[in-house]
Image (cartoon, rainbow, N blue to C red; front, side):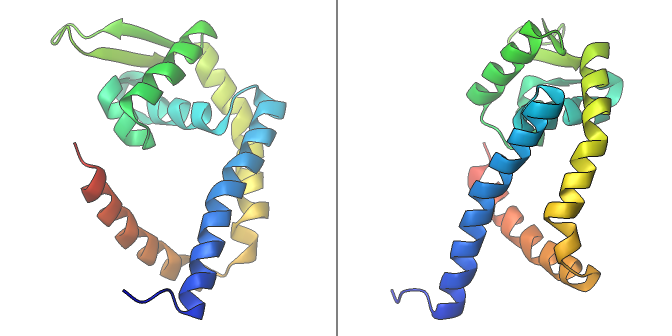
Amino acid sequence: MPGLDGDEELFWRSLVELLLRLPRVLDEHFDREARVGMTDYSVLVALSEAPSGELRMGELAEATALSRSRMSRVVDDLVRRSLVTRRRCEQDARSAIAAITPEGLAVLTAAYPGHVARVRSLVLDHITKSEMRTTTQALSRVLTALRETTAD
């Protein structure tokens, strides 16, 4: 199989650096401003958008693209910090349900303005609407392939 051509290599290296650098920068800001990391924020967002502010752990892992074991550790930490509660599912004792608490919602609400400002300054301010639409279409195709590869 041939190697990557120049354009492919440049694209791939740029994407890898973005995937490594952006979460680190976002985590630093989240931790400093809201005492949560990007992963915590993603979990709180998913729960806040769910009906009744709660999801089964498997659904929460899927919504945040985390493994079930990683999700369990993240939720345990959020429970210790009173940002989330965890309880057994009444319909299926093998499942657990995570729910956002008022404290978790307050942290999410406080972190949101800074997060939006960073999304704009770090990413959106550097691309046009047309580039955004084209990139979104391309990334959607890649994500579809990835989801099929990682489906349970």
